[in-house]
Length: 162
Image (cartoon, rainbow, N blue to C red; front, side):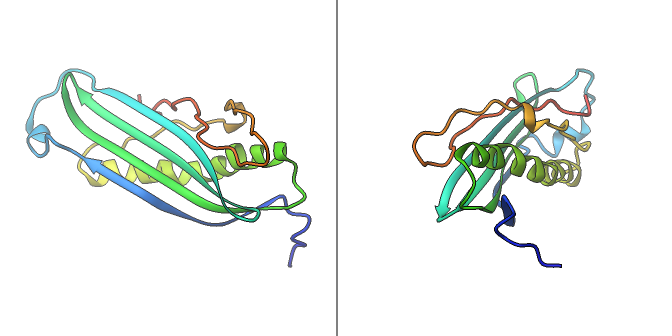
């Protein structure tokens, strides 16, 4: 069944890892130490959207996860997970803001979350699972003129395994 593209508010054309970095500067010796204290986990989270053509936008979720013991870093992850999104030309600016900074990130986040979990597990650490995010409650800055929302920041998610 083919949908009429005029009735769709948006379409995710593709999704991809734009940038990925993993550092474990104290490996492998950290795996052989007896650790009695709880590691400190810092999570950063940002949503960005930028125009990529007529009615076409790139939406990016940028995650950072730093797990450390006192001054020693266990691991540091930086992930930019993106998608190209086509929006309906009939959408209002408010609809596009909601689509680009809430609906699309809600779709993309489980994939980014899975990448972080798999990366920590495959690196010899216990799997790190980020808590789900309710993107409907993310505060969004208003757009100016006809520009796409950009550099919008969401609150940092807390890890689900703490």
